[in-house]
Picture (tube, rainbow, N blue to C red):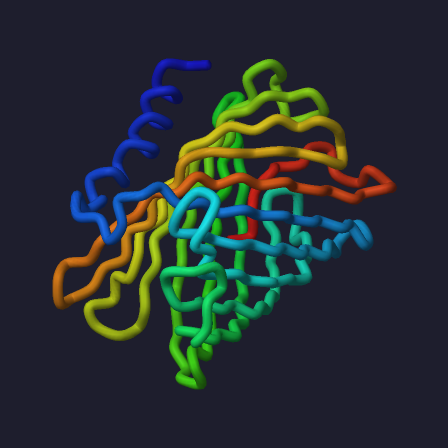
Length: 243
C-alpha cells in the first residue's frame, strides 16, 4: 500500500477524535449487540434486516432495542440506494428494558451508498435522510458515514479474511444548532464464509446538547452478519451494519 494512502486513512480515523467530549454521561463501558441479514433477491434488489440491543453496562442495564429493514437497489458496481423503516424503543434506566418507556420511535429513511477503492482499502460513503416520529412528534435527521475497510491476509474481502474496519458518522437536523451527534467506531472482523462474518470493536457516541455542550459514552460493539446470496451475484461483499 502506498504511504500516502496509509496517511490518509490514519487522518480519517483520527480526525473525529477532536470532536469527542471529555465529559461522560456514564463512565462504565456499555455494549451494542447486533445481528444483521442481507438476502439477495435478484441482480438489482437486496433485502436487509437488522436487530440490535444496547446496554449501559457490558452485560446488564439493557435500555434500548431496534428492529429495522430495507430494500436496496443496485445502481451500478459502485452505488446503491435503499428505502428502509424501523421500530426503535428506549427504556428507563437503570434496569433491563425497564418501563415506563422513555422514547417510542418509528422511522423511515432513504439512503445512497457510494463505494470505491484506494489500493486495498475499501471505502464506503453513506448518505442518509431520515423521517422520525418520536413519541408522536415528527423530526428530520441527516447522516453521513465514512467507512474504510482494510483486508489483511487477502487483497479482497472473501472467506477466511481478517480485516480492519472503522467508521465515523455525523448526524444533523434542520433545526438549530443543526449538529446532533458524532459516532466513531474502530474494530476488526473475520469473514468465516460467504454466509457468516463476525465483527467487534470500540464505539464512542457523542451527543451534542446546546445547554451543556453534550456528553459521550463508550461501548463495545459486537456484530454477527449473515449474507444469503445463493447465486453468488456479488464478487465481493463489504461487511457492515445498517445502523
